[in-house]
Amino acid sequence: MSNFDAYWDAWAPVWAELENFFFETDSINLILEKLEPPVLIVGAGLGLVVEHLKNSGIECDGLDLSKQMLAKAKELRGLDLIHGDAAEMPIKDNTYNSCISASGVIDFIGDEDVIKKIIAEMRRVTTASGNVFVAFGHFSPAMEKACREMGAIKGNHLQIRESLKYSALLASKDIEEIENQPAIGTEKEQQFGMGYYKIFKQAKDPDSLINVAPEFQYYRTEAEVRRLFKNMDIELKALSVTDTSYIAFI
Picture (cartoon, helix red, strand yellow):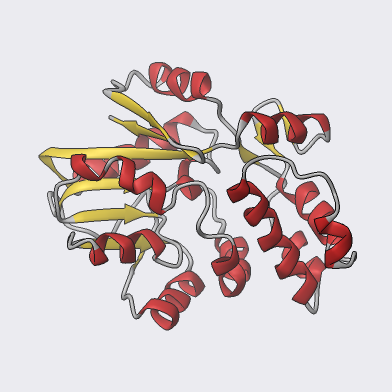
């Protein structure tokens, strides 16, 4: 699969400002009753969801490609996450009863053969009777409309680097000026945007965070998520919809 090590490593020290968005605690709560422990979170990042499940009394591990994310998860939460690629997990067969791919994984991949390889790996490490989930991030209708109008979303691509440049530009303004602008989207989306504002306001070298980012990630609507699994000939048992993510039960 494509290597995003440099991107995630660079953003790991500041990711805590952004982690509670897309596939987050509210999203995992929606499928909580479908989870059979032990659970594996693929693309665990700083371990927000892993910690949330553990605090809920559910045995859970996390895997992530970024060594810096793993180090930060240890520093912030005392979590020992697994280092590994979602397409080649260093995990034995049938280890977990539930496996979830977080929104920072498939959202960055367009090649359906690679996606199928990751899903095959998820199924390999999950028991035959276990449950497998794939999460995709999305915005509210109002925010998506605004992003499309300003060119931050083009087709099914979220223009990451251009969006970061815009966030860095906003960070050059005083907070009072930002707060006086008309609010777009949900309260959580506004908090998400403010997270980027804080990051770039404090960044010594904003360009280092922007230039390491990929040009885009995939932004799939509900219809496109359903179409993706149909194209891959993978049965979609259910699709849960939260304010910030779609969670495919396959």
